[in-house]
Length: 424
Image (cartoon, rainbow, N blue to C red):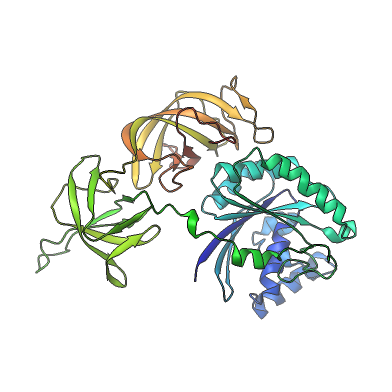
């Protein structure tokens, strides 16, 4: 079955954790002991109902405060599709956690309180989802029971958000009215909103088309490990290159070129955990053998001779800063890009992006915690990358502090002259 990864986002108290709890409960994905534990905790908290949000709010601090802090992952399946859910936090100070949860998502479920409408955090999360190249956005207008299932209120919020979304690169926007607490339009269609003729959330998640979202054109294979025999044997001359196909398709007999050396060879065999295969495609982990013995090591990349990524050391990127110590020009960091590591120096902060208004502050001199901005980087080693909007796998990277080894930033590569939020 096809796998759909999706993340929830939205402001605090818009009902993200409750929605996931309801989705799991109504689709029969909750074990009896889990439900009993939630019932006991609900009683201990003084809740007048079984608080399904507790199925995802696993940290003690989250349960005490009634908010989501960390990214909680949940797994479930229906007869049509398998799902991985990332329940991301709504607080502004936890935007970095939201970026982490959405970084691998195919779709984002963005919740809005029907009484309040889109907020600053709603716009922030929608902008981040757009910057991360997520093509499918579902706006769930929650708590419709608190506005008497008013169709006019739903249409007002839908129109307001649609006007903002036109400024973003959102390819597929769906709006669904619901009540996560009562289960209306979550798994089953609501009897209270007969004026809504669209699908429930689960039906939409089962049917949304994501197969064409993967880049199956640009073959990129970052080498993760060179596999050699452990001891002398009849396989003494065996040499294979293990890794995950980042994008594209490769088949036995294809000609490939190795970056950065530029040596060429032909694919002799492709091995998988299930045995040999004639071809491999994006997201498969495989071992590739070549007809020639070449000097290839971890961090190198196999590509097609006629379809190469950009190779360079002077880089332009959008960065989400994740450290409490601000990012300033001249900072020295390490970059982790696919399987390749290099030292980098921050050359210039071009601007800081206001994710609420999409205004570019060119006068900014630093990026603070959770800020997003365009920066210029100088890498010690050449990187093999594509623009993020064309290839998420080779267009993303993380920045690491050399002293603490902590991840301090996440970034995506841009083409020169690109404008985030408007054809970035």
